[in-house]
Image (cartoon, rainbow, N blue to C red; front, side, top):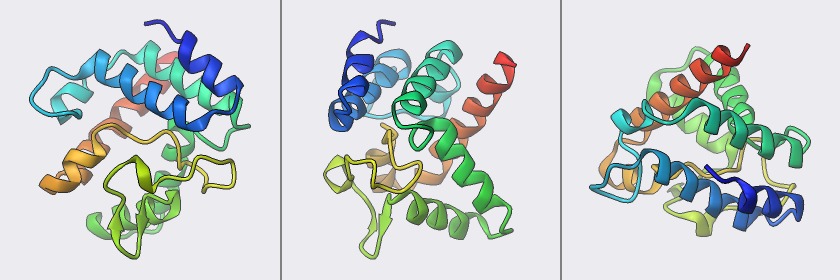
Length: 156
């Protein structure tokens, strides 16, 4: 896939445009249709080279503050706390800024497009909005970070 638009947005620190382009790239690679997001089985089909390239671009542009690896680091720290599944995901969401007192952010309007945002805040995962509505947030995010971890490990 062509990352030119993503790379240009990140170089300009246009975090909003980069976030939207990241979502477009992930959906173009994995979404088989049905709703505007990724189902767990679609996550498994995401191209590892694409995920690593997107992550590296975000990480480089933000000095490691944003990207899938930054999100995975937050998730690993939460996992070390030994919380139950639902509580762990809520803590993850709170630490990334995806959960507020009102609950999970339902769309990109609740995001902060600034380096002052919490570590791991961006990019937004394109499955989050539909899965919040259906109660499948944890399932899709678990599949995504498991798949990303395997992709990252396969590059080593």
